[in-house]
Amino acid sequence: MNEFELIQHFFTDSACAQGGENVSLGIGDDCALLQVPAGHSCAVSTDTLVSGIHFPENAPAFLLGQRTLAVATSDLAAMGATPIGFTLAITLPQLDATWLQAFSAGLSAMAQSCGITLVGGDTTRGPLAMTVTVLGAAPLQQTLLRSGAQVGDVLCVSGPLGAAAAAVPLLLDEIKAQDTPAAILQPLFDAYWSPQPQLALGQYLRGKAHAALDISDGLLADCGHIAKASKVCLQIQQSQVPVSVAASQLLGAAAGLKCALSGGDDYHLAFTIAAAQLAPLQRQFPAVQVIGQVCAGEGVQLLDQAGQSVTQSYSGYRHFN
Ligand code: ADP
Ligand code: MG
Image (tube, rainbow, N blue to C red; front, side, top):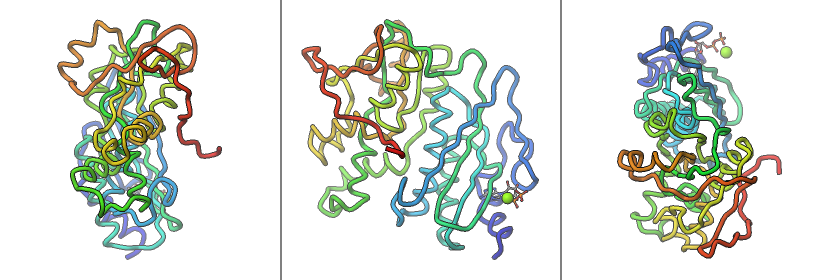
């Protein structure tokens, strides 16, 4: 099988490359052609996953396909954008048909649940790595930026945090999975391998939330980005932060909390919104929790129940530190 047969079989013919509203021309020509509906901007974001850095070398191909697309599409959710298409630049150490079939199936499963179509890419040989670029439609004036948080807003997250980070020591064999009950393992592995981009929530929040992002590097680090872009202080009540039950069961309460505060990889949304918007929001999205508020000042403050600032030994992952 040569490069072109590989592309045809595992990508052009795959379920994720078929159809798509606003896709005028998909895989096969020099460019794909996409339409952005009137009154929208084209939202674009790229993510690269490198073997051994972002996932274990022996990662199952189906799960990798799911996760690769999920982490990229989560950026569209964070902007309140509607997914249109994505490209996949993949570097493969060898042509392994079984691996490619499973990867393509995982990609298709996530593409279907996100309503996004594979429209092009590039296929090269080398150490395993994938780059996904997602494209979506973001309504003008209603797009969710990091820069709009207002003093007096409440700070919310879209669900429990820490599960994906708690899965990492299991994936790295630092904790033996066979000693851990399935009821704990499953939600942790699910959170890591198939995070669900919060697309419906992001679209609901259009024109309502004042600032938003998806939590990829850890709650505190990512809230720091909103604080900086919005020139405000985000105060977080530590006791209000929803911690994944399975993460606490696996690691204990203190380490579970640490995963929730600084672990990352959950791809939930953090956003600020006027308190008056909360009741209808939480009726429709009951997992949304208020964890703090926006104040004048700068940076992120983590507060204990007495309102005292808790020492920040937590920070997000940085590649060049
Ligand atoms: P070019 O040489 O013009 O860059 P390629 O030969 O690399 O084109 O690719 C041929 C077609 O296959 C293009 O439409 C490209 O977008 C698509 N393609 C290549 N690799 C992938 C991939 N991994 N996933 C999806 N589409 C791909
Ligand atoms: Mg090419």
